Length: 125
Image (tube, rainbow, N blue to C red; front, top):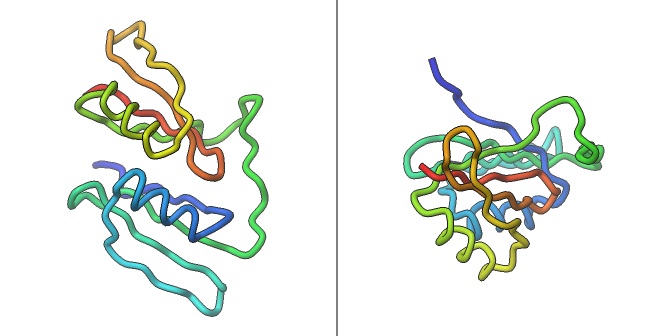
């Protein structure tokens, strides 16, 4: 029917929470600490739409990212204005790639990374 949410495990919960809530401006639905797992779970939304579960776990293994590896490649967020979003993220201290044009749709997009180097794409709506 639709994708319910995407789960992300981070290496530094405080850094990633700040990134997703203050830099990307996702809304917090709920935050819980699960003592038995020594793990935080932060449910995040775009507007009212639940999209990401951010988890912390003690000593998670590094994510293979480069060269390309099997598994989730990146997360893509739809934005009204790619250039404005890129400027906003650069002003917040992110290193953003140059804007590219999708050869099949003609739409603009660019990539940046979260604190654990998970590739994030921002794609023209």
